[in-house]
Image (tube, rainbow, N blue to C red):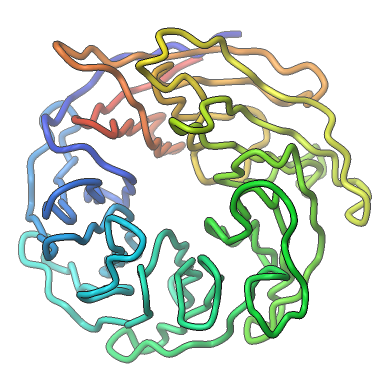
Length: 357
C-alpha cells in the first residue's frame, strides 16, 4: 500500500505557522512581518484566492489560527521573548463574511502572549506566558459568549511557579507548548519535559491523567493513536527540530497502562545539508488510526502507516517545488472527507494536494 499525491493548487504567499480549514475557508497564520492572518477561498482548490488579510503590529505575529463555524481565533505573540509591549493574547473574530472579518473581542494575557491553542467551539485551550510563571502555562478560556471571553482554569508544570517549591532540573524548557482536546482528555506537549495527558471532565479543574518524559527532546505536538476498539492505545509525540537541536523525530508510546507508558517505537529520517532543518515538526492534529501525516521541514510531507506501532512503514511523501529557496514544510491539515491535504511552508507558499491509496 502506498499513498500517492496529485497537486491541485498553489498559493504564492508569505510563510505560515499554521493552516486550518473549515468548509471552503482556509486560514493561514503567518510567521514573520506584520502579515498576521490570511483567509483564503478554497472552494476551487486549483485556484485558491485571498478573501481578506488581518495585519498585526510591528514586533507581533499571529502565526496560529483556528476556525469554528463563523469564528476565527488567532494568537498575538511577540516575535521574541522579552518584547512584551503591545497587545498580547487571543483575538476573536466574526468571519460570517470572510471577506470582511469583524473583531468580537480580545482576550489579554501577558508578557510574550499566546503561542498556540486548540478550540472546541466553546473553550480555547491556550499556551501563554503570564506574570508570576516561568514560560508558557496552559489556560482554558470560556468563549460561551465570544464577545466576552473569561478564564475558566489554568494549569502548569511543577517548577513553573516559584510557589511550587520545586525546581526543574531537566534539559531545555519546562513549559507548555500546546494542548489538543480529544474527548475529556487534553494531549499536552511540554517541550523538553515530555508530555502530559490531562483529565478535563471538569474543565475548571484539570487533573493529571498520565505523564511521560519521552526522550527529553523538544516535544512539539501530541496526538492519540486509536486501537481497533476505537479507544486510545498509544500516544504519538512529534518532536520539533530547530537550529540548536536539529535532531527530532516521532516517539510512539504504549498507554495500555496509563500509569506506566512505555516507548515502543520511534521514527527517524536521514539528515542532509546542515544549512537546512531535516528533523520533524508537526503532524495533522487529529486522532490517528492508520495514516500519520507529518510536516517534516526539509523532507516536506511524510506519511507513515502506524496501524501496527511495532512495525511502522513509510507509505508516501511529497516535496513542494521551490525555485531559489529551500523547502521548510511547517504545518499540514488533512480533509479526510475530500482526501485533500493543505501543506504550509514556513518560508513561502501553500500547496493543496489530493491523496489516494
